[in-house]
Length: 266
Image (cartoon, rainbow, N blue to C red; front, side):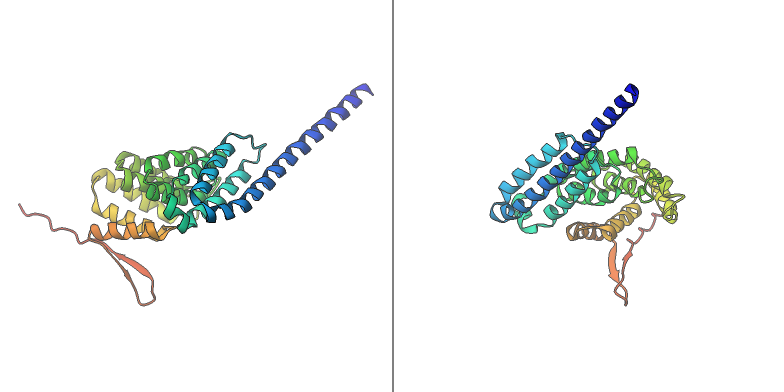
């Protein structure tokens, strides 16, 4: 009977501990929602002050224990990032400096959140102009993701490779990233893109300054851009390389590659 009583007492305290953890998590969620309501008014009144307060909240969330609700924190941070990024009026006054803080938090709490990485590349690499920092955050994803966890995980390698190629000039890194993108795409429903990524790596190995590879890469940036500003940057780069962007009779976009320069006769 004594042993049974001890087991019962242990289970009782375990249940109370679990209830306390859930209660703390729910209280945190409610607090986050409450601050979200207050921030809407603050942003309109003083965007710079609102951004400073948001920066403090993000730093706090990096340090606080999450009681196992890391995914919930990452989801909340991403939703708030979308609101932050889409507020053009406020960003015209404050810029996009918090993009790095949002994705530092998101990739720390949930590096397997594969769907956020296109936005990471757009906001941190293109808008904030810190592609090396973006690649550091992408490394958190490539270190823990796999095609078995998420069939679109290969895109993290692809975006990492594009940033390395187009914005950093890290050709060996871009080659490795595209080879890994091909490896992760194989065996999934996206396997048809694997040869494209493998060919990109081979082209870069043979010709690190390949205009064709850069044209195709900027064309993909244009096609997959989550923001018009990045799309406009890609368009400018395509035209600099001698390519063009057209629309067919159905209104669909297609790309015309640069004309190949004739080889010099000996």
